[in-house]
Length: 254
Image 1: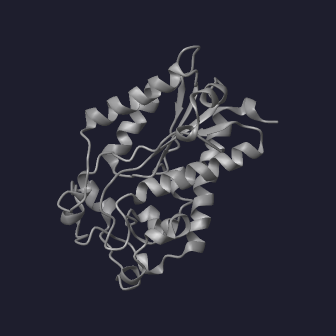
Image 2: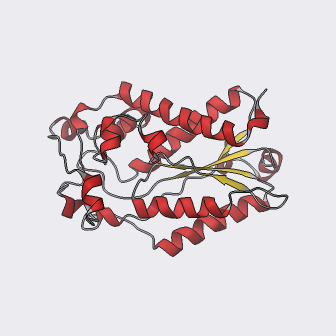
């Protein structure tokens, strides 16, 4: 898989055209418990994009990885150190600008590979993708395989479906597989499971982890995580993206 940031402009000119699939990994910079780094969601977004691209390239697609977006809406981690958030309008404008810049390079196929699941953040990604739902000679189609949708979420395990997965078993397993040196193992092994029923609390208007009861910026069961499970989850995430991409651009079938 080609990484756009590592190419020369001459190489980029050769790599980017109307049939190239450009992945934009989207995460955030926010607290993920006492055991995971602030860039956890960026790590997950990159892992799922790279694995999906590998699967696509095996069937003849050309894929390019854009530099990841490491900022988003992080209202839920308000009150914890290290949180860096954008305003909703800033995120929308930034995504629109990046799409426009890729369009100017001849790109007509863009995939948002998002791993930050805060509802307000996801809503903006859906909106931008909705504004680019049809390709034309001068506009790209933006595909957003949203893993929070039920048809995707049901394939990602019980903890993910419950909503209690922030820095829990689900996210910790993926980081153990994708960036093991970033995990504070001694701290992880000592963490007790935390169940906050986040989805139910969100329905009742709770909009921060502190108010929901996640006082150490994590929920779920990180001590039960494993690199093996993380590798399986990355593969499942990649399958979800691969399937959505092939449905959207079936003409790439050999």
